[in-house]
Length: 348
Image 1: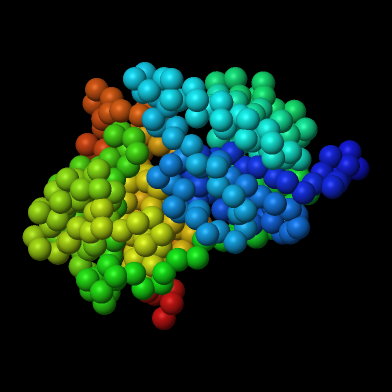
Image 2: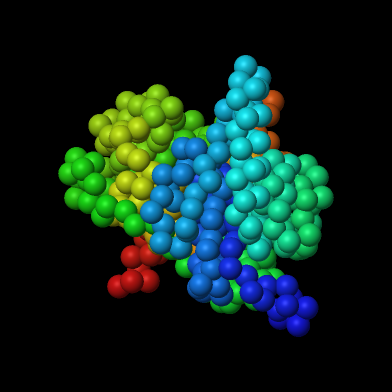
C-alpha cells in the first residue's frame, strides 16, 4: 500500500457503505464487509440498504446502523412530493454523521448521489460505474468487468489496505431452527425457480419435471410475490416437491438452505446464499454471465447453453430466447447426476 493511500485512510473512524440492493449483491458484499472490519476494527460502519432487504442485515455485529431507503417507492410519480421529502431528509441526516469514507458498491446514479450526500472527504467507487456515478467519487478504482462481483468489490478493499486473501461471509445472526424447519423432510434438495429478471427464468414446468426425477424430495423456495411460480413447480413435480414460497423471512432462508443437500436454481439472490454456505449449487444461466455473477467457488456447477449470443445481459426474453428454451430437462438432470456422482467418488 503506497504512503499516499496510507495517509488517505489514517484516522478513519466512520465508514458508510452504499449498497441498497439486490439480495445477491448484498451477499457478494459480505466478504468486503469482513475485510473492511478486519482493517478498521475500531471504525463505525453504517450501510444504506433498500426496504425489504434490510431484514437480512438487521442485528449484524459489524454494522452499527442501517439507513433504510424506499428506493422502489421513489420511482412512483404519484408520491413525488413524499419521495423528495425522504431524499432531502436522507441528505440532511447523512451529512450530520461526519463520515470519513463512503464506498459506493452499486455504481448507479442514485447510489452516487447518496454517496455525495454523505459529504465524506473520501468517496470511493468504480471508474467503470454506470449512469455518471463516478462524478460523485473523489477516488475512482478500476474494477474489471471480467471477474466475479465478489472479487471486484474486494478491489476497493485492497485499495483501502485490507487483506483480501480469504473470502469470508459474516452473516447476521439467525435462528438455526426456525419453525418452517419442522415441516421439511430430514433430507432434501432445494429448487429456487425465481429470478429478479424475467430473462433469467427457466420455465417452472421444467423445474417441476426435473424435481420429479431427483433422488431427494425438493423444497421449492421463492418470495411471496413469486408463489405462483413455486406452486407451478410443485404441481408439475409428480408429488416430489413442496413449495414454502412466502413462508420464510430472508434470515430463515439461511438455515433452510444450509441443511439442503444441493441447490438448483436460476441466476437469483438465494443462489449466492447457498454458495456462501458451501451447499453445492446447480445454476441455470441464460443471458447472464456466470463469470461475473455465478455461484462463487469450485464446488458449484453452471448449466448454460453454448450459444454465440450468450451472454447478452438481456433483462427480458428476446425473440428466440434460445438460451433457456433449448435447455432441456434431461440435459440439466444429466449434468446434476454427473456432478453428484463425481462428488461422491471424490469423498469415498
